[in-house]
Length: 413
Image (cartoon, rainbow, N blue to C red; front, side, top):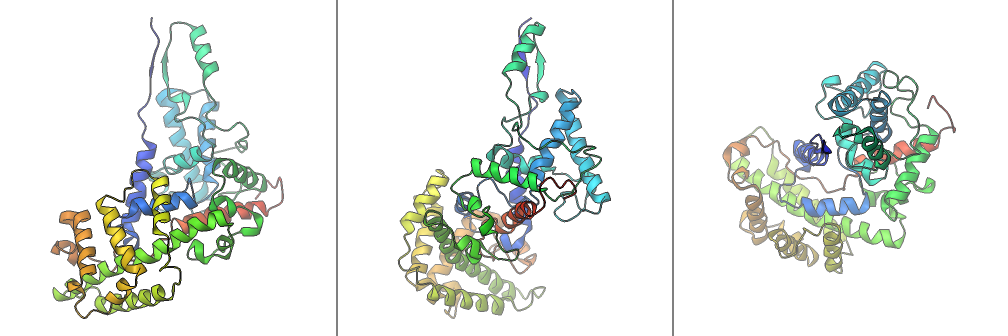
């Protein structure tokens, strides 16, 4: 009988990307209404490779492998193995909820019925940091081989799924999760080593240094003294990311102002005084732009070079590239900041350019043309500054630094 392999179909990376998009879409302040997500994600990956807006706690980078290893320990294969891994993940949810561990818990509200499991959320991160060493667990294969010798040979050739020095599965896991979602010293040290190896020369690694622990309440990487102290080769990317964030924020506010004016023109009142609100925010943005001495000499060619290197699909010759080039040039020469004082903002060429961009991206779902969606406007749609996953990154880094500060070999940590 001939040999054959059949794999369980899995699309964790696709699932993760979809969930991340849904997460962004559910946060009205973070929506990508102008279609700049490719550039945003390019800088996010430059600064903090392997992260996402779905990550909650660093210890999941260990908990997920432990769920697999516990199923593997039982000698399971195929669909039985896959079901056991999922059962382990859900049991972790129940165990932690029962222990009162809810801060950053995936399944905090839904419990064991949570739809998106940690393995889906952390799959890419596990691979990027070298914790996961193969795309799929070999235990999910259904193997039909003609002899035991062939099976033994295949087993010998299979790479180990997880890094060989992975901290051991805790005793009693998943019915017991000692330490909850807090890392022990040894676990934190191990994770730091994996990141140092997996994503060297990144701002993420810089912030793993014990001298550069981020502040627990900093609002953006450039606003954090630890990140601001990055060496020159990292500071350049951070500077481009900061200036891009500042510049495109004006376009997002201008878009929201146009929604606000149409909202009030339709006599809608669920959101109070939105025009005044966004005119005030644009005025504040204009002041910030005029105070930013680096904008007039900003090397936007260098910015594009970084973005396209991180994601070759990004093109300056695309509609996105054309829109951003025109908008960033207007910000750099001061004309965008001056535009916010126009009496009828909807007639200003820059405002019309922003409106056209949103309509191109959203089509029939544009709030500027769809009255049903206009009526459901919450008062904010993509109006926050880009911070490149900072809130999530800050928490992951904080977990690792907290673990490093604990006593070595402290099993109760």
